[in-house]
Every structure is written in structure tokens, then in C-alpha cells.
Length: 267
Image (cartoon, rainbow, N blue to C red; front, side, top):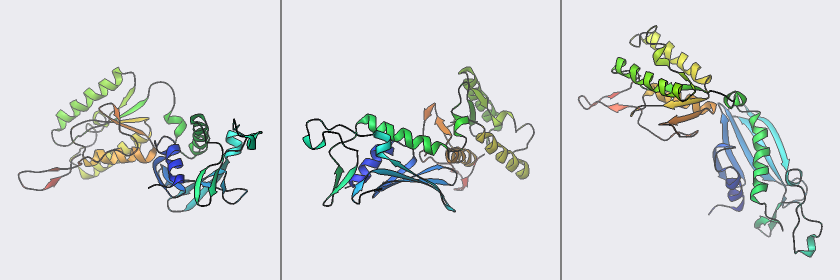
């Protein structure tokens, strides 16, 4: 059974909209911000022991440790709240969690949905400072959409498939970025040096886009590299026009050659 703190943290951040890939345990919620940045959110006491009146946010680098810390006091975010019908709190109460002999609960006043939204907004505004190119990816107007599709195998057929998907994105009013229409004519996919250079350039193109659209029944090794790169940067990834989120579902990135039993990696 999860603890009271876990339940509250999950209620705040469990949807993954403020903290990516949230995992709540004990009094803390951990998640990612893209690349090597991580975040820890936890309820703390700032004045009286046993009264948890603030949310402490710590941004960490995966290898170098803490980057920045911010303490958001519930008093500053929510103010003093009235407790109707309770003569002990005629002037209201400052929201906080208290330790009632080992049982944790909100003291006299339980935050409303609007209060939780206020806390989320404050946390989001702070964390947005550390997100990679957040402002660029949320810009208005047509989006740059990266076309992620298989290339190897029947190259001509796959190029035409990618062209059709790029055309769909164009007709929807966004700007398709399609490596299949750029690199095969100048970089030989059968040349290991040129193929590797094209792959790395494709990843650079991903970084410039606001969305990555994934097409095809199989996701190849090269496609997975593009998907994971987008996920690490916090770029929205979609397949069949349905958002799959920051942590895409497991899907086979290789296929078994039924003739000789070897695994073939494509693209």
C-alpha cells in the first residue's frame, strides 16, 4: 500500500505532464527533464517538525549531482484557507500535512482541485527553465515534423512511403522534415561511412523539430535511435497520429530472418 506522501505526489505529478516519467516512493517523486537532467520533488518541513508545509524541488545532473534547488511554500502558493464550521480556525489555516502520531494527513483543510493545479503550475514554471528548448517546441504556427520511417530493404518503395507520409503532414499544415527525401540521393546507404554520417545528421534534424511522427509496421534500429533521441529531448513522439508520450511502448526494433535464423537490423 502506498504511503500518504506517495498518494499526494502521484496526484500532483502522476500524469507525467509536469515531471516526465514520474516514480513516487516514500516522500519523494523522481522524474526526468530531458538529456541528463533529473528532478526530485518532496514534501518538507520549513518551520515546525512534523508539519510539512512546503514542496522542495531539486534539479540534478545524472552524473554531476545537484544543479539547483527551490522550496515552494504552500503558504505562498495557496495563502490562508478558511475552514467553515470549525470554531478553532476562525481566521483560517495555512495548508500543510501533519504527523498525527504516525498518521499523515492534511491538517484541517484539504486542498481542492484548483489548489493542486496552482501547485502544478508553480512547479512547471520552475522546471521549464531547465527543459531543453521548451519555448521553441511550444511555438505557435506550423510545426516542424520529423518523418521517422524505415529505409533499408526495398529502398525505392520505402522512400515513396516516406514521401507520402511527408505529403500528409504538409497537407495538414505542418512542415515535414523527411530525411528519406534528402540523404539517399547524396549519401549511399550501402556505404558504412556515408550511412553513419546520414544517421547522425538525421539526429541533428530531430533536434530542430517540434514533433516526431513514426510510420511503418516495424520500427528499425535507426528509427529507435531517432525515437529515443526525441524522448531524451522531451520532443513529442506520435505514431499513426496518436501521441505515445515521453516513454514510447516497447516494440520490436528487429525482425527474425525465417530463412537463416539471424536477426537483421534495418535502416
